[in-house]
Length: 196
Image 1 (cartoon, rainbow, N blue to C red):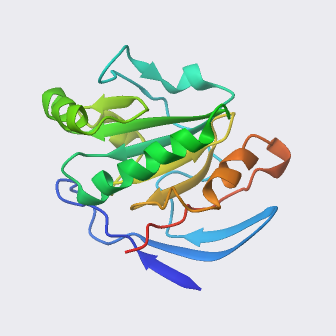
Image 2: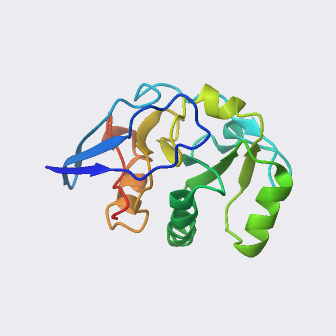
């Protein structure tokens, strides 16, 4: 069994007193047997509401993406693992092409100007939502940055990761594609950790 302690950012997140440990038990075609620390939200539960202003365009909401697999990714520009993960997320979006997979990246607790300056230097091909008052972070019980949730087409929580994810791992895109098939949806799991 491979145990990975995620080098996540904890700085201003007050409620975290321990590191997230993600354990990868096994992964075989057609099955998903992954274990991890307790998820911030119950796996299989409906996702909390999410409607936030976007950095470059109109507000975005989770409701508008019904029928798509959605990655909801919480991050901050001051968080080094979060910054490192942005390139992998950009490559994942490019690889997903016309597949019904959407990404909502939620910046937590930073002023719009700071976020805008960061993404002016490092543009990404997905929307950046602004959670300046941390209301979404609280609603989703996020205690570690980065934290990613993967929702199936009905927007039930199927996978999560507290800490950085290796979005370039060969297993990620097929795993996301399987979430579009209700018969093949795993009941729980995590995403592959980003190697140190």
